[in-house]
Length: 409
Ligand SMILES: *Cc1c(COP(=O)(O)O)cnc(C)c1O
Figure 1 (cartoon, rainbow, N blue to C red):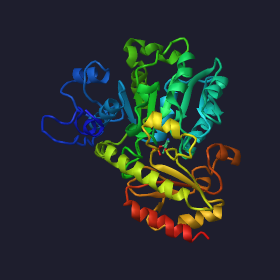
Figure 2 (cartoon, rainbow, N blue to C red; figure 1 turned 90 degrees about the vertical axis):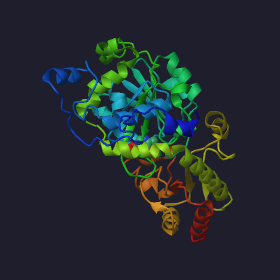
Figure 3 (cartoon, helix red, strand yellow; figure 1 turned 180 degrees about the horizontal axis):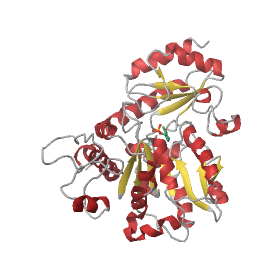
Figure 4 (spheres, protein in one colour; figure 1 turned 45 degrees about the horizontal axis):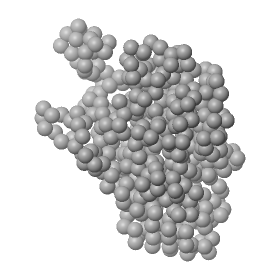
């Protein structure tokens, strides 16, 4: 099965008994059982079934199975948000005294989160550029995870997965990849060396900006050595499912960051058109970037542009597709605001992955908690505008940017 067919026809546990074509929405908190013995068995993972939605729900289960199958993972756990997914993907095995090596060009929320980890004794070493040499240099005996965004939001730096995963593998450290902006349409990171993948499914997988949500997918391809990851010791009996078993029976469940079933349903609908949307989004983004490159007085950053330092890697790793985000540097905050305010179709909103084109000034919003040095490392200048390109007809998009850019002078 090819990508779009997979999205529709891979077994995703829909309700075969009724023939419903979409997963039914089990919008309930609890599941009743015919005997105390049965509930005891379900509760203690000795029988299949559901007890309480915080620990599992059939609609969520269906969404998890679909994403796991599409990404080629051994299983997935869905979360109330992308941030919850990032947080528990790491806290599932990190302990006080551990260190993480991460890209300095992460999504602003993730940078804030890693700062929050410091209160619990977990320190992050940020590398300015995600090169094998920089990662190698930052790894020490306390390093327990390497965390990167495959395509940084909004720096749009592209990580060479095969090169980076060779380093993490050699050091026996799990590579956790936030693939939100790349989406499964560009790549299946688990097949290129990633061990754990997280998505903010609020974005491209949902596709219409209708539900905040996240997901963690386990590749089952990392050997959790109990001497380095003592928390996983008691889950050894689950074999390659140890990480997922610990998540489900531990922090994920106990923090209570479960997804609302109706949101899993909305995501399952969105997922079916991911391929179609991404095809159009990547095409619109490339055409818009090529047009913006010809406009004097601004600069444009898009990884699939020939002028991008990531062009070759985008060809090799993503088959030439550059995703659906580009950034414009308008030169100053004033000019950026003027350009944003002049756009007619692009909505001014803090989101990506919508069918509508969205624009934002990251320095005054997403990176408002970072100092200037950290902002610059994340690719955010005073004049940066992030454009999350939508599926509008390209002629209309281009005309909109053309008229707005005329207003700049
Ligand atoms: C949006 C985003 C997140 C956070 O996801 P939420 O669903 O907003 O919590 C994490 N990583 C990346 C790359 C994102 O774009």
